[in-house]
Length: 220
Image 1 (spheres, rainbow, N blue to C red):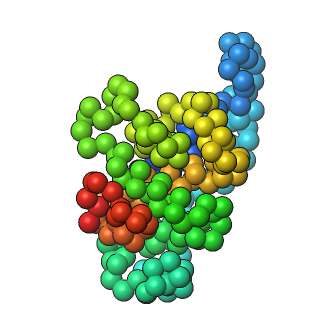
Image 2 (cartoon, rainbow, N blue to C red):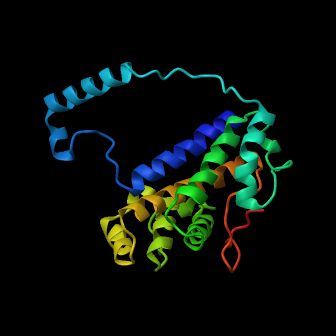
């Protein structure tokens, strides 16, 4: 079950970054895809490149205790305590502990965003997470704040990100690096929200709280 949860959460992470930043699904620009010969050639080139990649599935080398020992210093810096039994739901899939370790390092050590902005992103993702079928269909009012609007659309339907939303972020003072880090923060939050729901992990392990709390939607 944890393997399925890892694949599902990783899918949400990668897709959100691709959709929020409008990464094309094909190497050819859209107008050139109409030329059948060019499209076939691009597919052939891509297949040749992929055939040379080593995509074999490898066994994860660390056991649960080793993964726990590895994450402990990062966990302590992030939360002010050692993991204890916090990560026990991941005992049978310790690779997920390393995924959490990498997420902590990205959030706390490499992101250009301050903690207040990250907390706002987390709260916006938690609020935007669909709770009914209607939440995933049609159009819904977006928050006025450009960061929260980016997180809202990135959680509900990331493919609907528009150039106007990116322009609004730039007008608010976010450069290309900051926009990339916002997309990563939104993708990370979506990944960990789903792992929280699927595995029973405590949400407050990863999600930062704003001054007014975490979000309207319960995450305990």
